[in-house]
Image (spheres, rainbow, N blue to C red):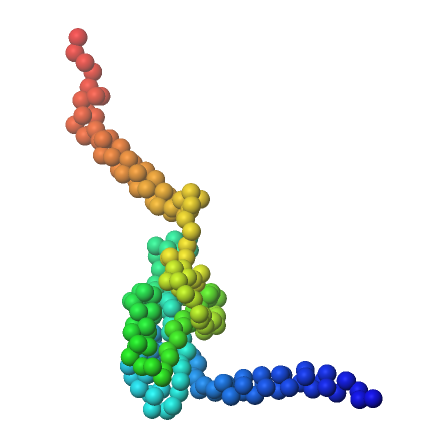
Length: 220
């Protein structure tokens, strides 16, 4: 009597072997480069057209960009950090606008069928200072601890990423008015100073002649 188990296993294995051969024939290896800066950010110097030409010349299929989203560093003197401050900024995508940046990448992709440029942003979530500018030990920390964002579809997702100095990412409420307390202190101080000077101007000391007259006895 012939066993049916070999036929059963053969019926299962043949479709699996056929599918694996078909999928292997459809697979194609792609060459890509990661973390590319363009002229839109401070670290890059090449335009998108130049990058496309280099990709085609070196038989590279795709490039993942990592342009600086917002490259700014500032220090403010307490308690008026947002008033008395020093800021240093560099070229970044947010300077020209996220929409213009994505549009430029899209137009460059339309020019070439065999090359794909994928937009991406390099962001710095947070940095902080240690020490004081009035001392020798004054250092900036975490300024180069960046993340790379890829794959966002909506422009608002790119523009509202929660990174330091991105005003579009802030949410304002009634409690935000508490940050105006330095202006209130300045206004009250100026009002007090001007009112004090005004009271000083209204008061005049008597002259020596008036003092002499005040000492003379009055005639009957």
